[in-house]
Length: 254
Image 1 (spheres, rainbow, N blue to C red):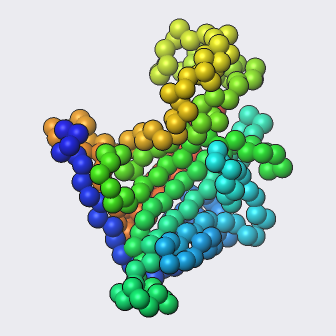
Image 2: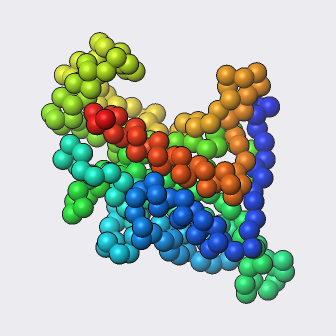
Image 3: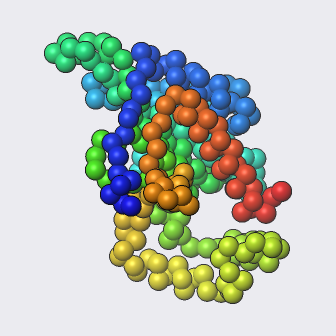
């Protein structure tokens, strides 16, 4: 099935990337409950155009990912358990030139990928990268799921403080669905975390692609899907809403 599911991505092209960005913004605003949103240009050259969502009206807030890259973030949820969740959204387009020798103005733009990053922390403090959701258009022979999730390394190996242990333990006990089993004891987290740091296999853990839309329950089901404008708009809206609901769930907020 692995080889069967491999397929070349089919990218979609648009005459103007900014039109797509505006339509994306219109779908995101109600979910984030923020009126003043816009995509700004981060990179513009002959290779790629990268845009990032920002809220200039309320002040620009930055967060740093595991690779040391700074990203503009927007508050995703109000304060929960003494911390705040933040979100970063970026889209990438490739400029298309009908005449490669005259790279003055692109004739169209080819969608290349979308990324949603989630962070946690106070507005004045360093924010911890947690995970990200992505949908890439890759012209290669890998078998990575599209769309997919990534877990950030700093979240995997971080130390759990006492309050986090207690809140996690109480969540397991109070909920009828215990995904990780009822036998987990809070005192084991420190030892497990230390063991995790020593595992060299997890040095590249952020490269693991967790499938988001697989059809493995069907015979010959695939886990790589093409993306077009409509599916991009729907995916952004639905994915952000799902992330909000799950963060409230794991935080014990109903």
